[in-house]
Image (cartoon, rainbow, N blue to C red; front, top):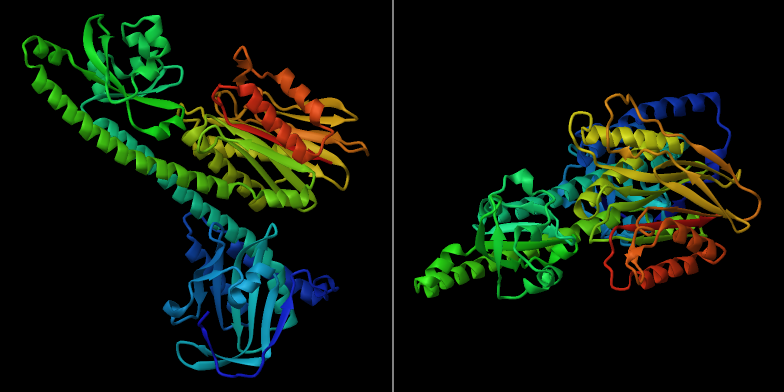
Length: 600
């Protein structure tokens, strides 16, 4: 960074020091113990970010308190932008010429980037002289410290501190001890910032689609793959003479006079440039001539929806009888070209938004490499139905425990993904910030957060999630489990054992007589021999396929796990994927699929 101006050419003395240095475990005096107790009490409140606080205001307040406390003169804070793997400037303290500071560093670039990559403290002193550019004078520095902020083995940021005198051992030790707390809170703030951005992007996509539907004079309707009506615009209501609520869930083809062949090949018939002429049935039983055509928004295939446009051509039919057909058809053709161009433009925007949302959701999921570090014998089989997913996995390490969970949110696609991202943030707040590690208490607190966020006591919202959550204790070879409609399956000597969770979900239906929802935990003491365990959502066993087009079913899924539980974890994942592909044949995937396996 450009706070300092180097004025000497002699070779500097550079010392790399790690946060796990031996001096952290050296016995301390009562006076030192009092100093650390008071220091951590003070900065515990400073580090705790408040509602409405931004990343910049939080970091400015931290530097304003921390730099003078450890005897420093200046300081800057950088956070890690995960997608680009770059350090980004957040704020500085006692820095006059902030515009001159380098705003970004790539990992490995310069001393700052090396600290981020090595995760070791860098101390520059004695042989290197610097001039600090302050508001009133030029002051010679004696020491510069670059402190890596590491959380869950990942560098979440870098703090650089400049000192007019070399800091005391006590202050240096305090900086090392508090660095992980700073890293944890910084990580939470950055993720919160990313989540807010993703919500805005997804909301903008929905708003654009709704505006498109309302500006057209044609009837626009969205139907699912079973031809059930999901969404529609005002023109569609007017054409068929229905009140809005009456259309919800109706079978689309019941609004037309059709034979069996037309019903079976309907979607194929309405594709292409030539609309399909059909006879519609209004709510009062009268009929009218209609043109039906598939809309040109390809991304809806990923949402399992089909957009269909419907035009009333009764007047045009009458005009044909009166030899006015040519003029009417030209006007209709112009409308089709104009609408098609509008829809194609909106489709590009919607597709870009969905792909961007996927990148955000992937970034919020825990890094699989970290799971391999703490659970070498494990796999994650994650197969979203659409671009984004309502299923998600989550894990973290707290003290001697590893918490691992598989969760299934209401719906899939965009609605499910919004719930999944909210669930990820809630879990990090509950476990990593509030310090709650017992699975039953985590699920209870998660239920409270979901219900409160969706205002389910005051509204008719019934969204929620099913979950299975384990706390793994390798030291005592035990598992503590809690579940919301989901189970834990494990094998000992090839024998299947199943631990059933509670029968109610997280969030969802709210009974007024229900004051609170308490989840129960179950403790499993494992034997000395290796034990293979599985957490999963219902997507795999509910998938349609086979020669009869039936569900895979719970019984077959348990048998498949029993057949593969003794194999290497990587091989197990390959078999799960191959078996599902062979089962589905020509069937579409019906739900998000998630299976997590591990061996203790």
